[in-house]
Length: 512
Image (cartoon, rainbow, N blue to C red; front, side, top):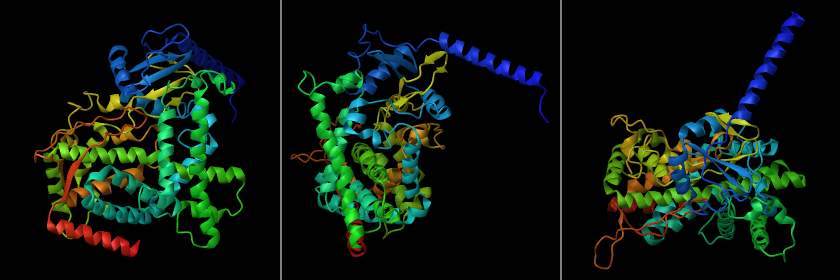
């Protein structure tokens, strides 16, 4: 039954009236407040190139949970509270799912074809789907087997050479990921594929810092000749693009050759090649750029978390002992912890949460771009603005995490009255841009932390005089924040633990 035309007319008038009122409200709404701006340059000179999250947190104390900046006329909004991030990036995720235009990293180097930086659309959704499907529950048995095997070898490396613990963390992630993605057995961090990925990560962190390169705000600069003054970024872009293309092409070509010879081990890349023997150039480029994100987007963040774990255990022996006591109650002697044990290890889970929170690996989330005008708490958010989540500010908000600079796993305990939110809500990105490999990363971190605590004791390094050395570790200030170099004393908890580690490593050598 159709409605009379009078009703239809009234509905149309109401819709137009509401739309007009919303548009009028948005037109009247001011931008969020922010620090004073210079003519034309705006805030280009007072946004630091490193440790931006600390300056942004300072400004949040002055201007509020959301403040605005301007760089050469382009608006940048910074979200500094869980409420603002939840409302905009989660509840209004469709408006904030895009990435900003980044000429140097995106166009000149080519990173815009990687899902993490790709503009929101069909190709981005297909890339995320490919990653998610390769990590879903149907593949968990194989993934967990690989993680168990690699952590057993990592334990042996830690016992035999504890001074290189940070290299061992990096090897573990490389070994897990390259076996999953390319069927490659990585024996050391000197493997050519690991070296390519390491260089990519250095390049990525260098070129993605907001405000570092003038070309990202004055895009016409990319079209000037290379001999023109101030064009050093072009040489950098050329070098980074060469590294990027090598990482995309060489591991893929290796697997493609193995598939042709019938020698390829099971992997995501081998499956893609076997399922589509005659891909178009676009399809093959899509496979290469999507698969390489597994390592490129996840290794640095995961390694940083593992490094923080070792540092925290050396600084907080009481926390280590409490976690080990829980482990001893749950895991019977003679075996390493497994993924099935996780549900019975609540204190260990709390330790993991604090590791994520204490010094977050990505203190500033990768920037988002809002695709249409919006209003939040009376403030106008203009279409096209860059919107950044200050994750560090949220994870050090004393209203959410009292005494935030103290490592305290009990803050999540119901028995202790802990109501602090799970930091993993903020550690893996937001909304439709949340990391599709977060389960792989979290499981990898769990198995290392659990197996290390079950078998090893971690303490401060000892100086020549036999006294413990107080570590003076500074975290780096780039896109990914790492603890600087440090040493720990790492020893088996007992003779039985030493035998367990040796047997586990021998078993892996036999079966993998």
